[in-house]
Length: 363
Ligand SMILES: Nc1ncnc2c1ncn2[C@@H]1O[C@H](COP(=O)(O)OP(=O)(O)OP(=O)(O)O)[C@@H](O)[C@H]1O
Ligand SMILES: CC(=O)N[C@H]1[C@@H]2OC[C@@H](O2)[C@@H](O)[C@@H]1O[C@H](C)C(=O)O
Image 1: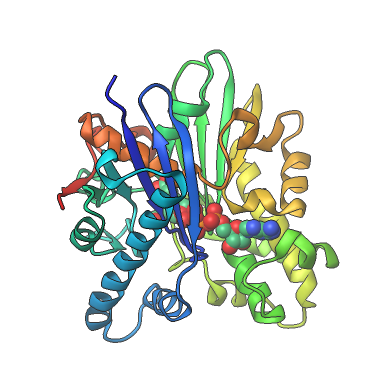
Image 2: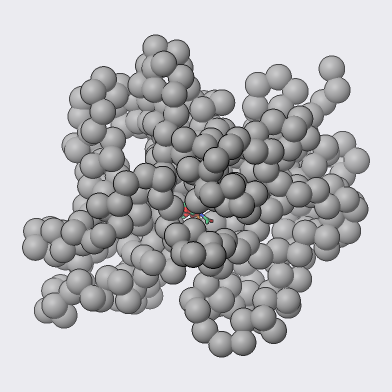
């Protein structure tokens, strides 16, 4: 059997760094190695700033894409060294790129992921598959979320209603039903508002182990304000991003008199509720959590309380490391491209048809 080794690269909305995995798809998907490359601080600042509509973006995108490709390539080199593989043994890299704008609902919808993929192919000597979202959008889809097809491939179990929840910057769910049907969408913020708030008040990049949330008391009125936002009333298909859920959005809901720790506690409850409200299915037996939110104990405890009797657990209990699911999904999408299999799920994104997603960049 010819080995099918694919590298997946994901740098998500949290901008915490670049996730890389080497995945073997020769039989069932198996993780051979992984690493996280932090962004140089200046690039992280620039990407954060490019994700907010501002000035002179065209001139700034070029160098940012170049530097991003260099960081992705350095990550690939580190990963290959770590697992002791050579570039020529790798079938392809599936690279998500860095989302700086996602506007699926306007008259001329668009989504933009940065990364000079030609340069990544040239620097690594490995073929790159990228630009996964825009074909789905060309057929009327949201272009997101795209992980549900991969979630189905690895988490679905005949006869069981299961849900997979990715809690990154933004949270998205996949509902894998007993009869094989699949739905899913972005539920709203994952960690992004908690990250913004703890960074403002404690100068920390994130609420490590939920410590700041655990200090505060729930503010029921604020919670209702947050949940009353229009996004939560929209029906699926729907997807969102940092251009919608950001500090300015949160500030509009505050009186200014709240204690910071109470706001943080309320944000973690709000995140849990905005996810759990979408998972109220009869006979939902298991909920698998992946993404960085799995490490936030206050959030996880709230989710378990809100979803009982379903069992809320890390995706590791289904044999998939929660920190690498998204990067594995982009390795999986690259192998789907090579097999010319559809990567989107029209019932999820709203696209008019199932499509092979991605564009190939040869070295
Ligand atoms: N020990 C921890 N305690 C609390 N929160 C944590 C911990 N570790 C990670 N996180 C949270 O997880 C976030 C990163 O999650 P992840 O890497 O899944 O996001 P992402 O992939 O960038 O986002 P998205 O899925 O929206 O693209 C951090 O910003 C932080 O909020
Ligand atoms: C436009 C974009 O980058 N969306 C991301 C983001 O992060 C989580 C959520 O919002 C999801 O819609 C998507 O990522 C995953 C990988 C997806 O497409 O399934």
